[in-house]
Image (cartoon, rainbow, N blue to C red):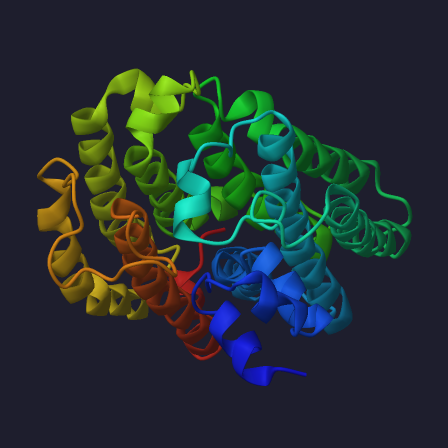
Length: 344
């Protein structure tokens, strides 16, 4: 077991040669194949679903919360595997395409055969499905959870094509990480739908959306040449960059608004601790993407040729962690504060 590689694969997308790959354990290979470093965004969404339930003073079954978290992370991993496979068989990842430059593409780089890659996809997908079925069975076969499971499967299978290629990928991310993961996760844990939870999840979900926006800006020119019409291809780089900036600023405004209407206690102002990270990132989004790697900018393993994506990721990670900590503190304080702070 290569624990050092496990840790590395959970923080960056490591570059490995075929020789190095062949010596790795199966877990290391799975973590690299699923781009595990980005799965933390889904992990946080699942954690937030449970925290929102506790925020509303709903009883939460710990086992159900753990299974929900595992299932969502495995579903995201399944999508990443299928994304690479679909792009490979469609010929998208040929000729030194962007995806093969910032991290290993298991099939295109010869690390896995197509059959092996599909095996990873099938096993990961079946484990995600098993988690979903467990949650359905423990909720008396709830038709709503069946619907949520079905919607999740649609996004897993059809995000790469046709959604991403028809300017719907960014909207899909907003829907999946917000209403589907957090709102749906809340429903699974509490048995009730709550639109307040969906709105309150927006500060975090907008940050997740900036990451996919950033990546699509980074590869806008090559996507345009391959007739992959992501939203940055359709609206142009400048509009896309300013859209990302808006989605970085809005979470702070929404958090303040939610405090003003007493959905959150003032402790949620802790998210402003992430402002210094934003101040480091935003100047880059005011200018076009550089044609060559800027001096000092990391190369490979999640760095160049990615430029806006890693900066969006760092900003989202900083805000997301403080948002989660703020929600935890809000839950704890709510038990001691008067119901003055609780929206009926």
